[in-house]
Length: 304
Ligand code: CP
Ligand code: NVA
View (spheres, rainbow, N blue to C red):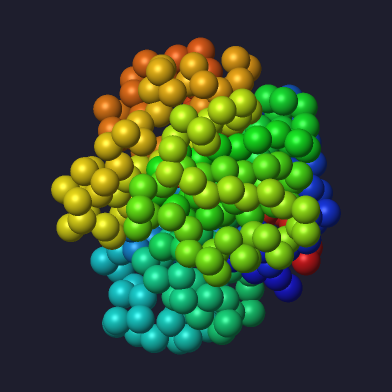
C-alpha cells in the first residue's frame, strides 16, 4: 500500500506509468466512459482550505470510475483540534478506500498517512501540490509530444506549486528555472529534494524574469499570495511587482511556448487577461487534466 504525498517519494518510471495510464483513461472517457473499477469504493476528501479544481476533479474522477467521493469541509472534523489526526486517520480507514487531504501544515498530511491503512493523497499542503504537478506534466507531454529536454520557467513565488513542478521537471527530463524576488526563493532543502531525483537535473534560481523565460518552452506562474498567507497580501503584492507574466515577457520566450497556471488566477497581478486568455495559454486544458491525472493516481494506488 502506497501514499501519494510528494513526487520525490515515487520513481520516475512509476510516474511515467501513471501518465501513460492517465492518457488511456482520458481516451477511454472521451470514447464513452470509464470502466466501473471503483464500484462500491469511496474516497474521503478532507479540506482545510477552499477548492474548485481539486474538489470537483476528484469527485468526478470517483464518479466516472463507478465509485463515490465524500466531501468533508473545514468546519466539520476539526483536523487535529476536535480529534487527533491519528484517530481521524484510523477511523477513516474503516469507512473509505482512499483519503485525499488538503491541509495547511504539510506535517498533517504526513501524519494522516502515518496512521492510515488506506492510501492517502496530498491534495495540497503549504509545501507541495503533487496532483497539480502530474496534471501539469500530462499537459506538457500532450502539447509537445514529449517532456525530455524542455525548459520550464517558473515566474514568482517559490511555493507549493513551484516545488512540486520542480520535482516533476526532475522526474520527466526537463530543465527548471525559477525567477523570484529576494525572500521568496526556494530553500536549499527544497532544491535538494528535487536534485536528488535525477543527478543530471538542471535547476537555476535567479531574480530576473526576462532571463528566466529566455527560450523557455513552458512559462508557469501562480498566485503571489497562497491560501493562509492573506495577512501578508500588501507586502507580497509589493515584492512581486515586476514578476507579472504579460505579453511583453512572452516576447523573450520560445515562440512556441505555452503559459500555464494552476488557477485560481489573480488576473492583473501574476498574469494578465491577455496572456491567460491568449493563444499561448494552456490553463484550461491543464485544469481539465487534473481529472485525468487523478484517475490514474487513484487506479495506481488501488493496486499498489
Ligand atoms: N489548482 C487547484 O488546486 O485549484 P483549487 O484550489 O481550486 O483546487
Ligand atoms: N499556491 C496556491 C495554489 C492554489 C491551488 C495556494 O497554496 O494557495
